[in-house]
Image 1 (cartoon, rainbow, N blue to C red):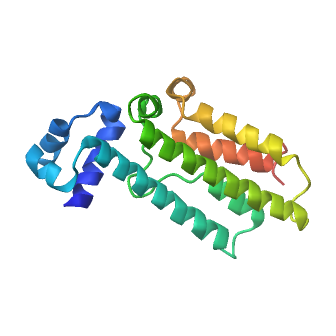
Image 2 (cartoon, one colour; image 1 turned 90 degrees about the vertical axis):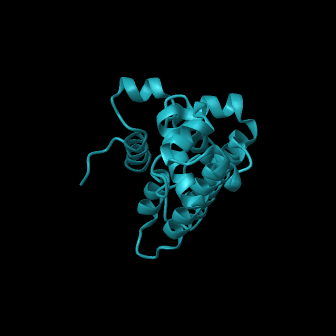
Image 3 (tube, one colour; image 1 turned 135 degrees about the vertical axis):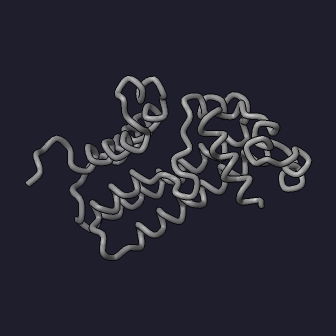
Length: 186
């Protein structure tokens, strides 16, 4: 039942953002609010659990990518840049990230810390591959800032709506540009 509640709450996050109520969720699940509170003490705990589960999902995908001996260095970089949660699908709502920052600061910090850790892992991987001459030397400090700025902008709903693009497709385009640049494919 706990997983069923998490899945339904993730759908609420996608459609209503953090503004969904426990009553909305209870209606979706055809349960009483009391039943929800048997599994989650508060809406904050529920939102935290959704984000923690999505983060764990992404961490597992990332670990699998880095340890996959069949992928080239370039394929690993591109795959890591394109990761989105599988367990709930991409959790994206036009106001979700702003609402988390404004109304759920602890959960926002959880997401921010994870994004920092993910970026640190990627930059370390790239730096290591520069050292062993698998990648050409680049300024990783500048690369870090490019990725930070770009991923922040890709969470902006106005940008996505204006470009008529999904968040997942925007990440894929970013990964392609970062990895392959502007040169035509061979």
